[in-house]
Length: 458
Ligand SMILES: [Zn+2]
Image (cartoon, rainbow, N blue to C red):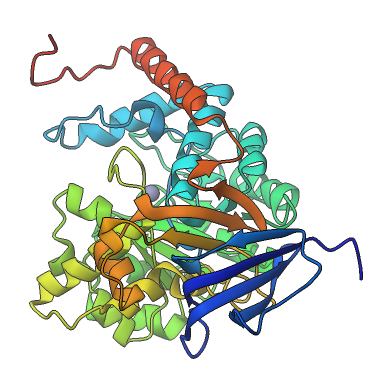
């Protein structure tokens, strides 16, 4: 037998929710992993292997594919998380960018690692960091040591903006992106994907969007953009629905993923469907900002129109909740609430959004999103011997509506165990937490930013 192959057998799970084509849920299931790939998944009695390096006992666990978070800024928010009062209004983003702008590369590294630790600990194995990390060369260390799977890029703008984003000439924007794609796409043994990441149509002209889309096609990579409800476009002094403008600029297609997309019109949904453009919805962000998710995000209509939709959480300091599991829950229940129809976004669809649909929205479905032979071993084991999982008869309903990341016991990415019995294996968590608390204090002092508690500290 080839000794170069590392084999892990995860055995005797209560349920393996495969998310495969038939959506099989295997009772008494086992999974065999060879290096980074799943080589068998089935009934425990059928998945046997004598020559395994590691056996993971999975009794009383529910196993799912790792969750996919398609929009999650990880590089800055954890350092000053929770500082903003609820009534800050538009000053919120200005403060976010001011604080972020002052971060050193080393501060960004530790803050990113804390965000990644939180995400992995609660079952998210793939994230898209939408371009806000300034020092990817330094933060690479956190991506590598943690073992997470991630998509990143350079945040681009070519219009003056209140957010201290660098204003690039078109030539610079193209050059810096091209060099980033060449350097990083496919690195970290394929776990790091580099994408094209203009910020939003308010601060990126249509002409640059057009050029960036051509670049992403040439490099065969994805591109992502923030889309708000409405807004003046950088290149036209008119108000036009964003998706209609994007089609005009050619910034639509199977490698384009648009984040947020609140307030889409029927015409815009038709454009997304006909151009196969994907959407990432961030319900935790919408609800915290009073955006009226159930009324303003047409999740059911997008799904009905066969638009690819995945889930994100945005940043740890505007939605504050980074847990993909809780975002999945909110997408389901807020759509029921907004439409007045409890049959909308059933538990099965909610779980698809966080797994296989999320993979499709990022164009990664041939590698991740389900537990099938030949796919990456990105696997989450939930401990069901906990009150919130009981009683257990339908694991999909229980996972979507009762459970959350607290019960995530073991997590693998690329066949490597990153979280084992609730403990991250790649970092001393307590030391990391204390370090980032110190970074946050320093950053606020340095920028003279403080939002005193409305209640007295005594
Ligand atoms: Zn964002």
